[in-house]
Image 1: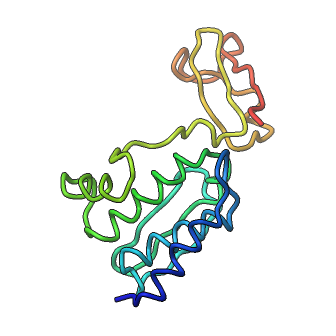
Image 2: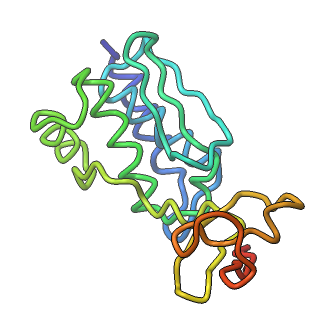
Amino acid sequence: MPDAQSKRLCVGLVNQTNKGGTMNLEEIEILMLTKMCENELGGWTLEWDNSKTHLGLTYTRSHRIVLSKQLIKFDKTTVNDVCCHELAHAITGEGHTASWRVKCLLLGGNGRAEEIAPDSFFKWTGMCKSGHIIHRHRLHEGTRGGSCASCHKGFSREHMFNWVMNF
């Protein structure tokens, strides 16, 4: 259990973060470590990955919370929601249950379990002439000429994707 000095340190760290816009990795780390301290998760570790398919993961057996460096692309509200989401998993040891949702809300999160804007992670978006959309992290030589499998089984020049770079 954290002592009074540790709790003051936690509060001090939170007050150092910026007030608006997005957050850098150091600010996100301070926010998450502070929340972990406040909720007595001293035996847990915080790690980073470069994932483009999730913003956070909680491993209850190994007491690890992993956040994606992609969080720097999102606003402070979203970052806070992700941190509270993962903390609720760590505290309850549960999936997206009713008690997990209550804990997430009590921590200051939105209590939702859905994926947050996964399309924004992809560098490329392809659209066929019928409007079907697919996403890719990278385009390989064969992908550039890809055609829509929803419109036609196998390759079809008539149903090729037009690719747009998202960022």
